[in-house]
Image (tube, rainbow, N blue to C red; front, side, top):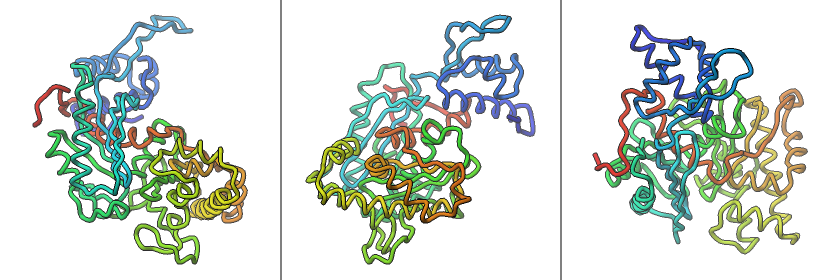
Length: 398
């Protein structure tokens, strides 16, 4: 890792961020590992850790035994009392969680909605759930902010949801709405994009630099592409809408009115209806699907797996990834008949592009979007540890 900056202060800020980034992604490591991974000397690491400890962002624990000679190295961990709230509005529920600096979901609550929530309703529910969770946190906790994972296109400059078709939101300033209610800084992004980052840092994408991520939910299908370890955003920040890629001449429309797309053919609500279920999470759906032995349900599931396989094959040809990660509802489909998907996607992709490429289920499960959304709120703190303010859990709204 190289240091950057035009002067000593810039270098110090960069090094503080580098150390905190490593700790937030690993959870804990000895000082000696920080020295090795950053390329900084022991004295510099000692000074940086001390500063981060003074800021209340890391803690040090008793020395661990080392196999080599010399003094044992102290263990450094991100402070667990630094947290962020995560919010995920979807067409059937609002989910809110509390996530630690190291990506651990401390608490989570889901409030089902009878109909797709209007933006004002979603903001009001989220605010009430945040207040509920905030009351249960210890007095020494501090809040970095709120991250929102929304199933739609988001303009990053001002947090406006340009289009969330399944929620019927158009040009909605949701970040501002929620910030006015909670008094906390709010950051917002597309749910699938945040999911891809969470899996890259904490889940099944860890260690890979070329990733295609596909996520299915009640709000449709989205995607994220990681190229050389960095999210592929596109010219206006809307890249990764993989659910709207056309794979068939079917007249079936997706949530945006496009026909024959992956999202139009792989639909969670269709399988729910066949199973006689309503408003269940993906874990409950997976159990019900595995238990059902009817030919009707199998036919629907196999047709959706076949459509997903065509899309996966196309993405292999386009992006040449190391790994394709399937999350949410798509992970449920994959687990139902993995051999079917793995055999059929090869029919749609070139042999050379398949070399060393794997298809895996996302690892973070039901906590995926909580971790991703919270990471968005924690990012300013990781990038500028010394200058980012935190809000006491019992603090007043700013």
